[in-house]
Image (cartoon, rainbow, N blue to C red; front, side, top):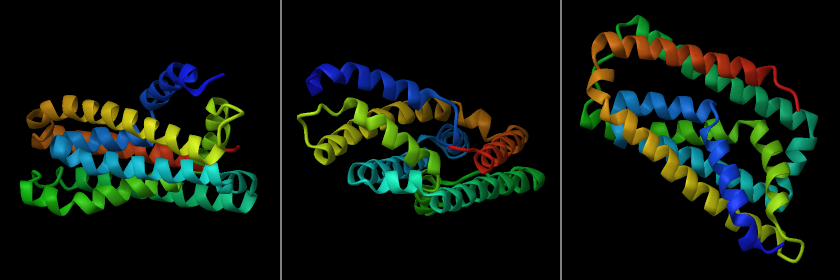
Length: 209
């Protein structure tokens, strides 16, 4: 089947994947609620960089090695789980201290690199991403097409779709930013988001292939 004919199914699959609850959604929602739309942009870009790196690794066969290697899978699983738990505990501490100071424009700019790094690390330290890429992309690569170039192209399409989707979500959440940044609401949001991140970390720690 031609690549163009496969695109509607690919786009639908990407939308369904993007809308599923997970670490990406939790990070973006928390960042948009506390720092507004502009604060969520680096998180989204970091997550998508990590996704594209995994896609290229899948095309090059590296992701298949990670998916097949018990040691690599366990190492990534532990690192990813530990980082999610760390983010969750940090959110809990902020909630315990009263929700932290209201984010300023200067603080948001200073935290750009940190948010970008968090998004990238969360995505790269997820071994399930490697397994997913190995299983997902070959379904949409026609037999007469080069695997690496076609996978890289499909990954760009996925990244573009997810950026639009996640930034749209961030814009919606950011519109209620004034309400989210009230001290009481901010404290509760940090507590809830911390709990979700810790739960996701524990789930990743116990996940199997």
